Amino acid sequence: MRIPSSPHKRYLNGADWCLRALAVGTKKRTGRRLVFAVSVCLEGAPDPEQLKRTFILFSQQFPVLRGSDARCWCLAPYWKYSASLPPRVPEEIRVGGAVFAQGEGSLDPVKVVEETMNRYSAIPGWRIALEVFKTQSSSNCVLVFLFDHALFDAKGADSFIHLFFQKVNGEQPQLSEAEIAPRADAQLENWGKRFKDGQQANRCILKLMNEQTAYLPLPPELTTRPIRLYEHCFTPEEAKRIQERAFAVAGYLMFAPYALATAASAFHPLFNRPAMADFDFVISTSTDKQRAATRKRHLFFNDLSFLFFQFPVKAAVQRDALAGLLRDQLVQQARDGLPAILEEGNLLMRIFPAKWLWAFLMKFYRNRMSSFAFTSLGEPQMTLSEVAGYRVMDYTHFPVIPTPPGLGLILCQHAGKLHAVLSCFEGVISDEEAKAVLARFREQALA
Amino acid sequence: MDKDTIIIQLKERIAFLLDKDPAAISADQPLHEMGLDSIAFVDLLVFIEKQFKIALASSGLAQEDFKSLNCLAQRIARSAPL
Image (tube, rainbow over all chains, first blue to last red):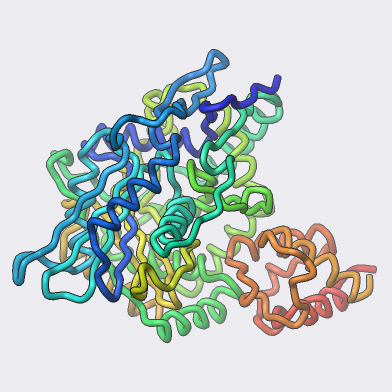
């Protein structure tokens, strides 16, 4: 039976609900929300107050930002929101920032994002935020956008920022009704097929999982520990060289397997312990749904599926051979249609409350889930080169990594540059270890 | 199957993956300049496997085979079972 979406009622999909379960678990373990940030560095400093006012006005036109989870009689979770305009700026939309006096604060984007993310990830209620940072003397500024993963994935966030910048630039962004008030059916028909898809996906995943998943133990008292962010930026020339190496080593257009093999190789010394000599790396990575119908611009909710990779820890020392192995695993999962069947199967998982789903996933994955998280985002949907007349110098994604593993690497590109961002909770790895991972990643990506 | 028919089918698939008009896809452009990433490219490889019964993924994915849709179609036409 088809149960359609109604106005101000958007049914959540399987990826939305899995992320909700991860958010519940991460909150329980770390006290932090599952959010992510995007930093935008401008070569110049527009008026911060004007930017914030425009941001509030722009965001307020999306009633979906002022919603919350609810559950339908049919057991499917949905996003419930009202179209009525609130009398004042709703708590779901936040703005802030600072103008640092000489020598008072740092305009290093990573430090600024880290501080902002640590502050916001502990605050309940907000869905989207913008903080503007500049120094009195500096001619640059850093904009930090924060997004609740319950409502945004990386591509949706990019599209949202693109539209907001269009507004700042005095253009009138074209928005469809579906973007302002998104709708989605309950998708509860075809239970039989979806149950079979779920079984098939489970079999594929179980083949990858075993009791010997390599993991780094989480430190005690995680709720008192901050999120740590580290970044390395490859120049456009270096990024081009890495692409050429990827095509030569892993095969044409095989950047993602090459980058993952390089990441595993960079993380390897942390996992190279006698107790884990025969263990396997297991890595789950999110991927856009590769279908024309779903590649239309979307702003809200998670349009994702997942891929899984597994290989012996000791295989990470031979990066080139590993890149080939990961390419083969990627091709095999595409042949098996894993992202699509997982997406279908996940629709049935929505009948569990998020708390139960988290407990189930922890049991299913034997509390280890993955050795580290990895995502390769590519060029962003935000394609504007100027904002308010100022050049966009950098555009970078910074995630909070679900815990476990509480450790991950994300790659994103902008204007030919390649950014590698390592995100972890303090104590999962040390400051020196994190810097060493990025240094190894740099060295081996170019090798 | 002749090369032109193969090119038409490849263009349609790439247009589907990139949400573009097939007419906007040039048969002389390298695939990586069209905006395909690893995941979309693997989808194309699986399509080629199913449609033309050729496992290009196990051939090492040499860049020469994918210089353009023309080259790729030629490669498929050469290897496709009659």
